[in-house]
Length: 97
Image (cartoon, rainbow, N blue to C red; front, side):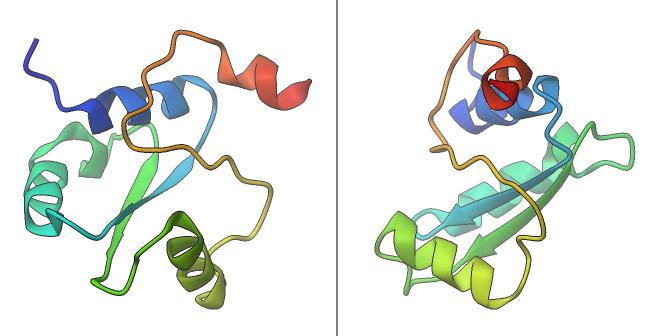
């Protein structure tokens, strides 16, 4: 109850074996930064490393993905999900299929 959707998404990724997540935001970036700073996701014992990337120039998912790629941040296979993903599937099984 009263848990931001981004926390469900990050939990899903962490349980699926994801070790690094990029949170990309255009609107409400200040609120997302504040929430992430106060959350377990940015603590030393977090199950995954989370970095936040925000820009008013991100109009689409493609814009954000191009910006991250231009910084050479994607170094391996990746999973692209939206921030409002809520699932009880096993990501590791899906990725290995």
